Amino acid sequence: MPVHNIPPVYDKNSRILILGSFPSVRSRADEFFYAHPRNRFWQVISAVYECPLPCSVQDKKQLLLGNNIALWDVIARCSVTGSSDMSIKNAEPNDIGVIIRDANIQKIILNGKTAEKYYNRLVFPSTGIRCECLPSTSPANAAIKTEELIKIWKNSLLNS
Image 1 (cartoon, rainbow, N blue to C red):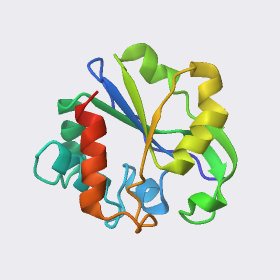
Image 2 (cartoon, rainbow, N blue to C red):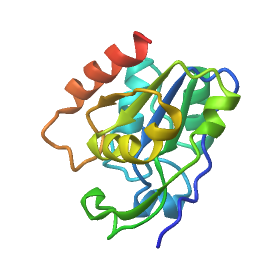
Image 3 (cartoon, helix red, strand yellow):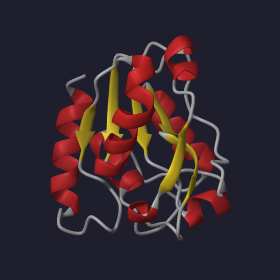
Image 4 (cartoon, rainbow, N blue to C red):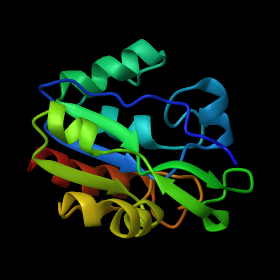
């Protein structure tokens, strides 16, 4: 059963927590979030904050922390086939409370419906914090064009 091997990104100034579901095979191999080149997460976040597209892990961390964003995933371990969210079974949650206790989180955003499903099932009962679910940046969500994703994410992130 794959284990989440990427520590959360946050600091005491983090105000927005973005949660995905579980890292892809590529992200687990690279040991950082949204490593698959077709995932639009970094493209969307850099466009929202009008920053250059970050290339290195350090640049990605700076983009997040410089805009008071924390990043992690809902699921700590699960049975999964490849990177398919649809195949997730036996999910166990990450301890989101660690971030909530140490940071100044005012809003939680879920990156897609799978993150929402598992947050509501596994995490909400312990936090009681409602979230906003945004369209997934995954390449599997090809129905929504990148420009529309940017618009939706910008509206949410900049109105927090």
